[in-house]
Length: 104
Image (cartoon, rainbow, N blue to C red):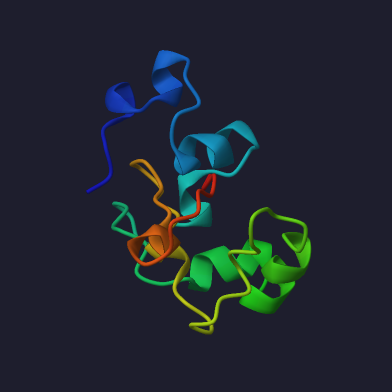
């Protein structure tokens, strides 16, 4: 469920969630949410539209430390396994690996 505008971090002057970062850069809700009223983004399709496929994203994050999280031994995984729009993103790799990654 998409939070009401008054509950959104950007409405309170904060840059807390990934959706807030997108909004601050000029992307409106319809960039990710294809339905009106908005529903959860069901796949990586909306992400790929702007950011490219996993190979293209992996090329952009090749210098990430300690590893390139987009060059996964699991192959292409859904973006929302780590990146969350309206709540804190997570380091899905940490389910098995002990390294820390900053996930926007």
